[in-house]
Amino acid sequence: MKVVRVSFPRRQSLAKNSTMEIVVQNAGQKTIPTISVTVKCGTEIGGSFSTATQDTNVADPLRPQFVVNKLPTATERVNPPLDPAPLERSSANVDTYPLGPLGAGRTATFMWDVTAVRPGPYHLCWRVNAGLYGKAKAVAASGGAPVSGEFRGNVAHKAPKATIGPDGRSIIESP
Image 1 (tube, rainbow, N blue to C red):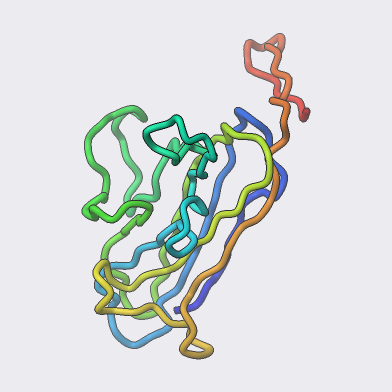
Image 2: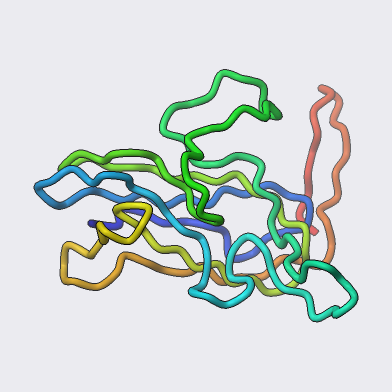
């Protein structure tokens, strides 16, 4: 595997959409059975689009840090954005986003549209997988290391100011 491009803004604002993108290429000679990306830091709670609260009075300590508005898909959807029909979510693995087989020399683009809903520092880890159940491993073309990385940054404590312009469109200013 070869990482072609990764991007996610380091500085973000509450209630403002942003895009997380990971583009990988199959640098090998064989088709990858199921290319996917897991967004999670190992076994720790948090490190994904959610974070853990220290409040012991809640049933589930995981709270969203980013709301995922749009998942990575192999083909663009023509359905309404809130359509509950499944995407390529053929995986029951939480925080794992599969796109299907990836031929030799081909690239896959994983793109998430997210909205920050919790202020403060964030830490998102990602790892590319060649299969869903651990039998096929994605390794870097430059060596046998796993294909992974992380995004770190901060979400501002104040949402951006939004007004309606003369043309009826929203104008969003930085906080």
